[in-house]
Length: 100
Image (cartoon, rainbow, N blue to C red; front, side, top):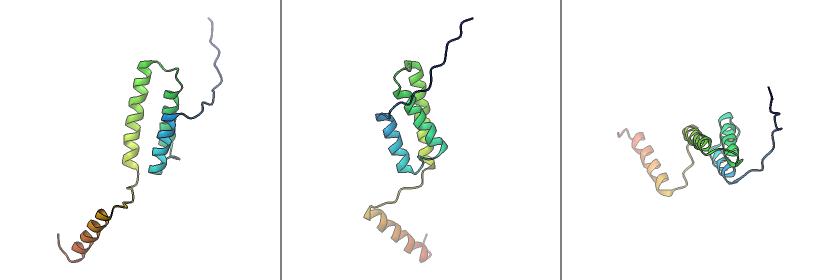
């Protein structure tokens, strides 16, 4: 029986997909989470270039699902929109006045 030798793991420089995933995770405040590390790993594997088409499709599906789950975990973004701020103030006044 012939056994293939394992290649040492190479450090691959970041790429466009990995950079985009990292920026999204930073925006969500989840870049240091275990799930965030998993998303970055998937992006890195996709960018390696040695992935067959069927495997790439599977990895893309996993990355898309993971990012969808992470988006739900992300804290709500602060709104800088003046209209949203006014609506929130109005709702606060309505509640204080006992209005539904």
